[in-house]
Image (cartoon, rainbow, N blue to C red; front, side):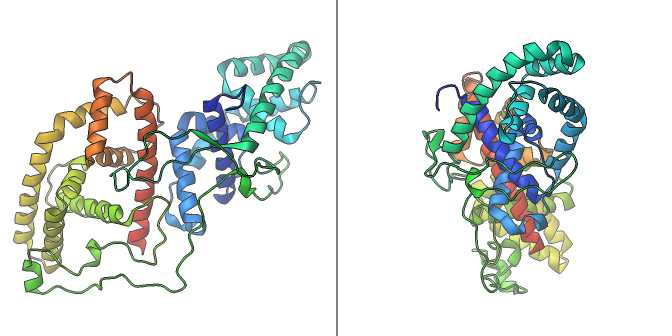
Length: 419
C-alpha cells in the first residue's frame, strides 16, 4: 500500500463504501461513519450481504434476505447519532476542518474509529470554545491522513476472494496479493452523496467506486428442470443406482439465477442435507448439522439413494418402511459421529474465539459442516487446533470466507424452494 496507509483500515473503508451503495438498494441511506463502525464489528456480515447483492442484483429484494444489517445500523445511529450531530456543529467552527464534503465524511469516520478519538470528541462538544485551539491542530493532522486514504481508495482495491468453494470443487490459491491497483483510477465521488439532515435524495452510486462481479443475465425464456417430476414406479424405487426422477434431488432449474459463488452441485448437496435433517426430525433422532453434512458429502451416492427412497416411501404413506430406512441412515451417521465427534467439539470451541462477528446458530453450524465435510478443511483445522495462536489470523480470515459463502447457499436454498 502507499506510505501512510494501514492495510486493515483501507480494507474496512473499501468494504464500507460498498456497503453505502448496498444501503441505497435496501433502501436505507447510510452515512459513512455508521457503516465504518458496523464493518469494524461485523465485517463478515457486511461482506456476505455485498456478495449476495453482487450475485442477485435485481432479484435481491425478493430473495428473502434477512435485514439484520439494517437493525444493526439503526442501533448504531440511535446510540451515536446525537454525538455525530454535535461533532459536525463543532467542526464547522474549526478553521482546519476540511470543507470538501467527501473529506469531511472521512474525517468524521476516522475520528470515531478509535476510543481516543471518541474521548476527544466528548471533550470538544462539552467545551467547544475552550477546545477549539487544540482541536484545530488535531483535525489538521487527521485531514492529512485522510487525504492519503482518499488517494489510495481511488487507485487501489482489495483482491476479491478466489472463486473456490469450501468443498474444494476448485483449487484455491494459497498465496495471493491482498491489494491490486485499479486499471482506471476513480475520478468521480468515492461514495454516494449522503442524505442531509433536512432530507434529500442521495446521488446514484458510482460503479467504479465499488467493483462488483458482472451481472448475470436471466434466460430469455423460462427453462424447465432437466428432469421432469414424475411418480416413480416400483421397479425404479428398487434400482440400485437410485435413478429416481424426482425434482427434490436434482440440480437447480436452469432458469434460477444463483447468487455469486454458488456451485449448483454443492447446492444440490446442501438441499439434500436439508432433506435429510427433516427426515430425522420426523423420526425424532437427535443429530447435529455437521454430521448430516458429512453423511451427505462423504458418502454421497449411498446417501442420495437412501434419501430419495425415503422421500418416496413418505410420499406413498409407507410409514414403517420410512422409519426403518431412517434408522438405517441414522446408524451410518453414528459412525461419522464416533469418528469426528471430539475433533468437531474442539474445533467449534476454537472457532468461537475468532474475531468474526456474531451470526445465527444455523449459519455457524452450516459453516462448521462445510469445514468438516472437506478433507482439506479438516486438515487445515487440525493445524489451527495444534497451534491456535499462530494460526488465529488465518483461521479468522478463512472462517469469514466460509461464513459468507454459507450465507450465499442459504439464500440460494430459499430461492430454490421458492422456485
